[in-house]
Length: 107
Image (cartoon, rainbow, N blue to C red; front, side, top):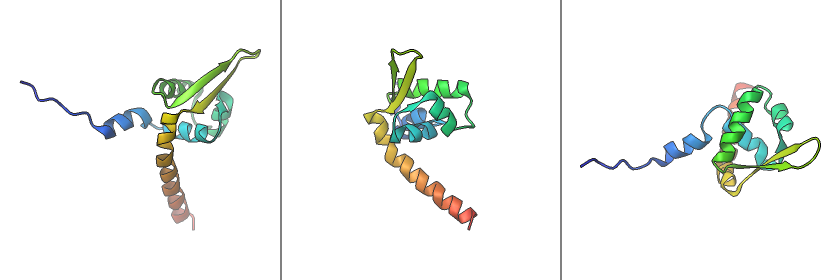
């Protein structure tokens, strides 16, 4: 008989929000709806290819919502979902931690 391995909640969370870009994307979308170009300007060091991939993954995980408008030229907006809002307090704590580090390193 094999032992059943219990899923780890931390591993599950990191699967969704881990990586270099996902928290930054969620943070930028958390305050207001954003278009692709806006996100690219707000996170200038991310490549277009990576931004596309990460937006797709976050949409698949149900963290953000993608709404395409039938307009010419086409318009797509990304917004945070209710599930994504569950992550937002964590991001705010990370932001506070980062701000303290910046202040310590730049007195």
